[in-house]
Length: 291
Ligand SMILES: [Mg+2]
Image (cartoon, rainbow, N blue to C red; front, side, top):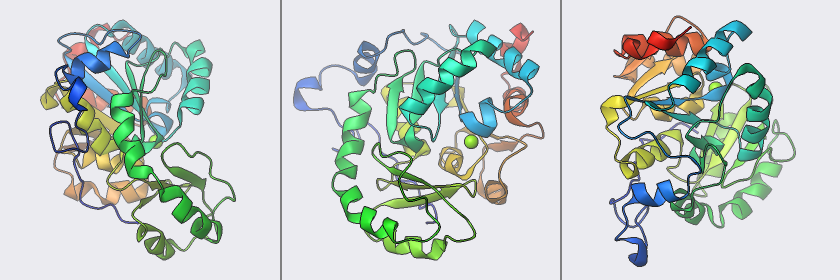
């Protein structure tokens, strides 16, 4: 169940993310752009990759309104990626609900803990990103579902099954040592927030998917800041990209901090913590428009 050293799939790194022969001539950036309802900012000053629950969604209503308004006003120079454990149905509901507070769809969504990548505006999945994850997941669920069904402490039905299996857990009843037997079938198990178990295709997580996306989009790593609060964000922090661990991070994530070279521990919670981290990493000048 422990996170393994990050496998970093990316375009040009072998067949895993590589394009098919007929598509090889078109750059991935162009191919991704063709699937987006809204163009990505050209020459972005910042690529902000934020978790949702506990991070961008955490804060008082006035604070969230303020931060969401700032994000909306910066779309031309801040490329916005939501990176979440939610599936696309849940993201759709959330965006509808948060629109009242001024939250706009991001440019891109990484959902299902890294197992889904979609256009932020249309929430249409991007085949370039999904196909290799599908290939890694094929046949895995059938193998592990019967084993998971016998594990005490898991909710009886998966909450989501899009290229992964997501369960609610009872941390007092789930014996996490038993997850090793599940991982023996070629999947990764990730417990986060003492609330969720994600069973993932091998090597796929928020970090690996983000790195693949950055490479495809030809984005400069120095422009990227990630932010999160729970153990499913650890893989983003382990990429070595500039990262913000918000003040309300779960204890297991805080324990990992000494091993995370580029991760800043904010004292502020949720979206205030994101702002604190942006200032820390030298992006404070982009916050001028913050009301
Ligand atoms: Mg979170």
